Image (cartoon, rainbow, N blue to C red; front, side, top):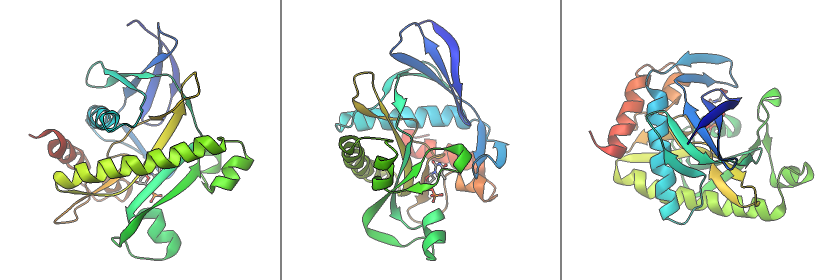
Length: 236
Ligand code: TMP
Ligand code: ASP
């Protein structure tokens, strides 16, 4: 597959055109940002791990009946995916209180919910990705009612598959962010990435943080946390 021009550069990834108009190549960088780009840094080896972890999860989810954009891993940092139009909603599922939920509602981190929560952010860097509800998303025509229903159902299904898998490797899936896209025929598929950048992972026993919060909060051991998550998923 011939790789062509760069179409888009985000904070952590680049997207390239290919000779197939329906397929693009994602390249994972080691660049890390937090707080809408205010904090910048590098997490050495992160791109490789996020590529591999994302592709593993995408394939696991496909097997469980969740359609995704995944096509083929090319090498350590590059993956072919179906070209999509991203729905400008960040979908956040939470199983345990942490991060902005704990802050917004004035509760401690670590409260295990009886049922997972779902919330949405409007994907717009200029506005700082504000929280949005589904009625507001419909008013802004960010998605159709049918798309929002599909996204909600898929997001909870992703949570069930991921929660079960991570429990088996001794990790609590605290919360995570998903993005969805439309194929050229309008089909909604899971897109973007699923990695320690976009999920909170806590060791089930020690509750040690094994994700990007180590970077966001200057906790140290950032690279080691990514390596440990790779080890949990793929073995040594
Ligand atoms: P939050 O508690 O800061 O709202 O984050 C919830 C989850 O979403 C957490 O697992 C980290 C992830 N996330 C992203 O992937 N990208 C973002 O821009 C933000 C703010 C959070
Ligand atoms: N990736 C987001 C940013 O740069 C935020 C985050 O993951 O905390 O702003």
